[in-house]
Image (cartoon, rainbow, N blue to C red; front, side, top):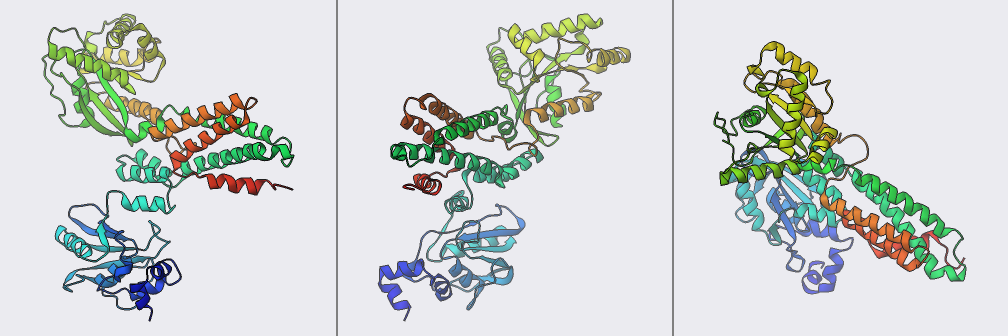
Length: 516
């Protein structure tokens, strides 16, 4: 009786798909496929555990035909498994009934799934032939198609399971390569950044609702006195909080993408040797011939859990060679862009007198940084670290004097003495380098969550500018002032992916008893 109108009447189909009859439809689904009128081409499947040989592979399915796929391929003729409980079954081809593998199946009925839709997982053996056979079998079912990149997460976002910041945190967690990146991504994925922005969004909605209520109903004396004054205070507080959030020195973005560390200095100072020592492999050619390195050589490192992109550059000197001149230009450009510059000096060239040696290093900094303004900046910031290399060429007594005296001399960035040949002083240098990198990235577990995306920063800067508009027009034109609040709300909505005019109306009628 029930199947006849399902095949024949479109409106009845819609009723059954969206009503309390949905569980019954799950039971009526068979291995012959979903009834034609109920076929939805938006049921997706994919290998979620990554490609390649592995012990266990996870195939995920999401959409209205998920129950059908589970019944057809797990040999379930009656009830579906208990939700979120693993069941050991033979995985079979829906047409030929050939056994493809034996594994675990899990059933996640909507809305209690990652995507908010009916979902299924097959936990099978991870051999390429097994996963290919299971995926091919799923593709043979009507209403099923392979998922596009990120489509499961997109559906979770569309179902309200995640906002955009949580989606980005999930992506960062998947791509995290260091411990600090993992911690930051996990914190964002858990919703800490989202909750901060949601709190600001809630306050902006209240501000906008109150101002618009004054504009629409103020002349009728239906609004309490002092409403706009309250909005003024809320807007000021939001501006202060957003401005403070923006003054993070890009720590979150730097941690996400990696700290740019550049090795710079004169030719034959041992820059490439330092690169090879840090990455523990011959990444750059080392030779006694000056000017061996012509281009930028990059390598990614994990320094105490923090991501570093280390760049070796051409030796800085005047040259008539066009190729070397281009290398020097690129080296200086990298120094300008760097988060941290390691200025490498051959310490065998240092004068024996410590004051003269300090003057020598200051002159050397000028040759690396070109302008006195840059030198002054280097002396006052954490962007530079002087590395005195080839310490093994000095007598033991002079090495000890360098280590003790340079720590007490002002007018220079921090100085490390080491030998890439013998690794003497390397551990102290790594400790100093780790401290600098940690300062540049910050502790991902302490304090308020930080900005991790350039788009977050751009939208928040727009929010602050929009709230400035409210302040400028507050006494001139309240409608223009309200537009500033609306623009700020839109900017936050673009970060989280959540904003709508109906929410403003809800607050108007919730906070104000119009006609009271």
